[in-house]
Length: 211
Image (cartoon, rainbow, N blue to C red; front, side, top):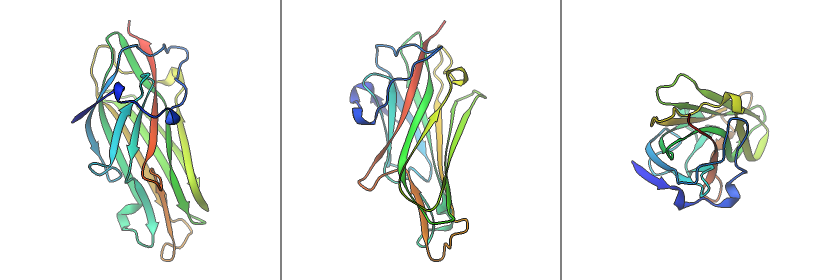
């Protein structure tokens, strides 16, 4: 387990505008602290994912360096699907609660004609039945950077229970299907990283005061 403070900072270039709206209040002035309890999955082997909190408490960023799903030449049968589950303890100032309002995902995709891919994410608090699952479809031919945004209407936000510390789970997945392409002659892949090393996934927070 390791701890990341808001003071660690995140490059402003990867942060969007704060998420506010009905039922949401400006972020608390005090720092939030994220304890990363576990990082598990074939898409985030040990040491290949990191979390940092923005200085203004409106977002946190996950950085991946080895998140790749592929089919075809050079791939293993299990490589078509990769996932990563983050289990986070989010410590918020007293009197506040939070929810994930949106998430920005980025990566690179090379899909042969006839191949398809899916990026999917599931969000939930430990012990709560409410979950939010969102997915994005991609169809070949594609050979370019990709970006996908999950947005949740304020009325549908899943809020952390007031006065309780519940682990927050984010389970992401990349899946590539050869479809009508020829996997014996071609390779299709999708990453959640970049050619120069890392890519940032930004999660934007909505805030409200507890009763």
